[in-house]
Length: 483
Image (cartoon, rainbow, N blue to C red; front, side):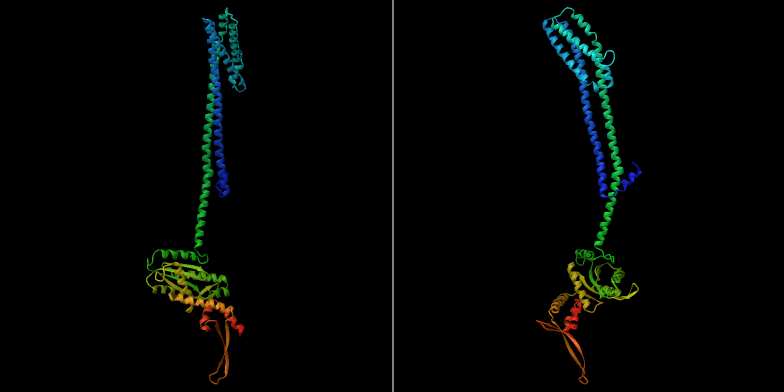
């Protein structure tokens, strides 16, 4: 096979090309198999024909002997009964011999050159001699029928003269038929051998130049698919911005931790943190700077916790999470949280800009606080809310009372949204008088929530909630509109 075709086959990688090669290979094998089956069928047909010819020529030789024998019995019959019996046998044998000869002569166009020469060429062709011999037998039968008895012996002796030569020639014809049939059989065997060798050679070539390149191509594609699958799996559990595990990867590790058994390797701290007022960085400096800050935070978390068995993840936006395992006490978890807030509070140089940010951290302990992964995340989230409420830039441990407090704040937030839409917030102007002489020195604007059920709600109760749940701007707009 030319090297160019081999290179082309070796470079096949597309599904259509692979299918084409397989179909081609199967077509070639099917073609050779069909050819072999056809040759076997043709060989059987030829062998059947040759066997028939051999049988006919052998039968003709036998009939020539029988006719000679019955003719001699007819001439030397001792009684009329023996003569009649020999006559009937001779007539039957002569009829069969003539029919066999006609069948052989009818295939003259299919005869080989030696057979055709023996039957129809030369000074005394076999066809002529057989017909002459049969005429002699007919004449003998006619003489017998006319009851001609005198001179019959001499007549028969004269017509028996060519018998020996005729038998020899018929023997030679049988030998020629047998030799030709054996030669055809040998040719068929050689052809079958060639087809078998060609089929094996084709299979070897297909294995070498089609199936082996295809197997290599499939192997390459399999490796590529495996690599792509591994990459997709890694992307499914990784954050592309920071190269940290994402929320899904973090959940897998947390599930594995809780499934390993409570307290199997000491305490584990689940920490949730986010950057304080990170939105201001994105809004004022742009998202590229914000992304750079997030990458820097990821690097600092790695550097701070590199000496511990920890899992660091970015949950999304400016939210990060940490699992610190193998802790001896709550104080150790507090020390880690302090290191995290201190590391993030260090100034950053991003795009020639001096940036400072803080992180609030919520901490819950496994198995002390809970053993359910979803509840542990909720606990850390509640502790994070409390850390923000405590002044930001610090950490806070989960306490069961936080559930009631956050529920209360969220209830206030829900009612505050209704109050904003239903105009329940009212601005009041309060004058400021001098204590020295009682004169009016100024005024201040106070916001009050006129709750339909609770009455007047002081600002100290709902303003922190408005700030926490991002409703402070709406409250400010209400004050400005009413003043």
